[in-house]
Length: 112
Image 1 (cartoon, rainbow, N blue to C red):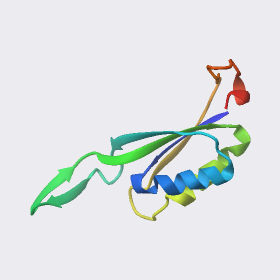
Image 2 (image 1 turned 135 degrees about the horizontal axis):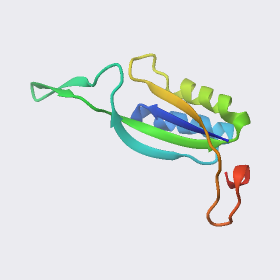
Image 3 (image 1 turned 60 degrees about the vertical axis):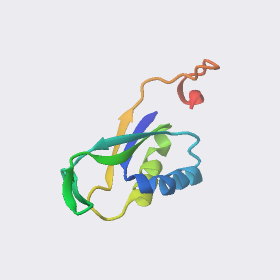
């Protein structure tokens, strides 16, 4: 199993969710997060005053899937979240050693 962790722009969440639903992904976790990458934050103007935002709002998606689906899910996220502009985000893929559904006690891929 794989854990796919994606950090994306908030306004791209619906497009990514739709792309994942079309692939048959049955569940994901969404968190609102803040951070910065190469852009080191951004500058905004409010009521004529310029101020720096050091941590940019992002959305983090966590998806656990079978190994065979990982490449397709990563490509779907990339295609749906891409704006061709700096700050589009990152995707990380990690191995999952074990999973268990709390209600039934199912383990491994059956727990997904």
